[in-house]
View 1 (cartoon, rainbow, N blue to C red):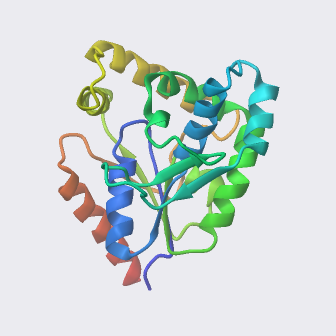
View 2: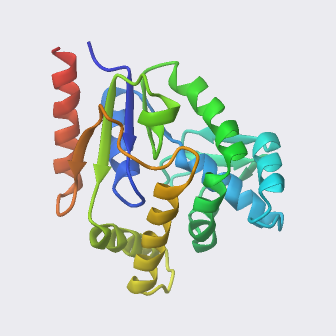
Length: 228
């Protein structure tokens, strides 16, 4: 039997979103990038000039904002559409300001509680590929298949730099590398649901590998699970 719940965790720019979306499409499953929810909260907080350092205010926002995760509503390369109180913020959540603040927002216990409840509700319905940083450890510890996707810091910085240059952002590679390093440190050391590999997750290093090769490897793991 095919695994019904697939969790893919890993650090920033490890390829989780790209691989998760492709695998979900092949299986006909829902693709759910849980990190998008934290980005949406961060984005709305910035729009509303809520100080990111104000944990109580950001938590209240997470508990009350209407965030909707939809299939793509525009043919502009997006993998999904994100609405916050009805406003399309799909590309806004990828801004440099959100990149710089999302790790702090996602470290807040109240924000994580609010998001985890929504994520579990969706994940437990099955036929889903969920990607994030704590799916296999916190959100869906009962997932049928858990994968920890990683890559070297250098490789991940190159990927994120390439993405941002393609969007027209004049950003230096070294700046992106430092942002990746800082985010890794915050994600791995936070008190609530830190980034780490689940004990029963399969480790995959995508450094130097093309996306199609990684997809093939993941599909092989899924097939192996099916044949058990």
